[in-house]
Length: 304
Image 1 (tube, helix red, strand yellow):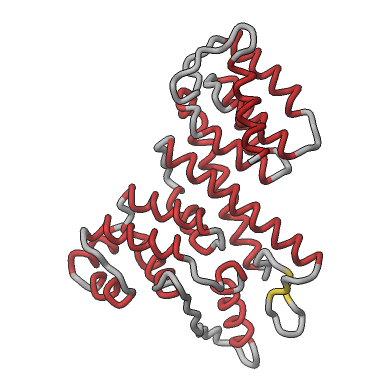
Image 2 (image 1 turned 120 degrees about the vertical axis):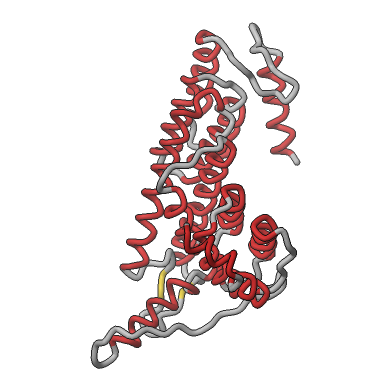
C-alpha cells in the first residue's frame, strides 16, 4: 500500500509540474510534440539513473504515458538490450501503448520472440531446462542458493516473454514466423505467457497448433490437478540410447518444476481457445480428441 501510494503521489507530482503535458482521461499522453517528448525523456534519464529497481520501474511507469516515436525508441532499446528481465518486461508492456510507432515496434518485438524461441530450443537440446539438475537422479534441484537463483532467472524470463507476447497482441502484429515462435512458448512454466499465446492462437484462428494444444490439455485437464505421462522413443541405436533419449524427451515436457502443479489459468485459456475454434464447450481432452477426428476439423488442421 505504501509503495502504491508513493507511485500515485509521484504521478500527481508530474501532472502538476510546470508546463504539464496534455493528459487524456486514462492518463495517457497522445500526440505530444518533440519538445514535450524530450522533456519527458530527460526527466526519465535522471529518475532511471539509480540502482533501486523499484524506482527504475516507477520511472518507466511515468514515461509510458508519453506517446511519441522517440519514447518508443527508448522503450524498444530497453526491451531488447537491458540486462534486467524486469526492466525488459516493463519496457515491452510500455511498448504496447506506443500505437503510433507500431510499424517499427511490431517487427522488432516479433524478431526478438523468434530469437528467444530458437534459444529456448537450443537450451533444451543441450539438456538445459532452466533449472539445475541432480546429476544422479536427473531431477530438478530447487532448494540450494544456486538452484533458487537459476529458477528465479527462468521465471523472470517467462514474465518478460509474456509482456512481449502481450505487446504484439495489443499492437495486432503477426509475421510469417509468429506461430513457429509462439508454439515453443507453450512449454514454458509461466502461466501468463502460455495463456497469452493461446489467446493469440484463438485470435488468429490458428488450426495448425491444435495437436500441441491437445498435448497441453492432457497435462492440465482440470484446474485443481495435473497429469504427467510416459514418453517412448526409438532411436534405432543399441544399448541405453533409447533410455537417454526418452529421459531427455520427458524432461523437455515435464522437467520444469513450475509445470508440475495445477495451472488453472492455463486450463481456462485452453477451454477458451477451444470455444473460439469450435463454437462449443469442450471440457475434457477426450472431447477434444473426438472433435479433432471430425472430417471438417481434420481438413483444417491438415490445410494449415
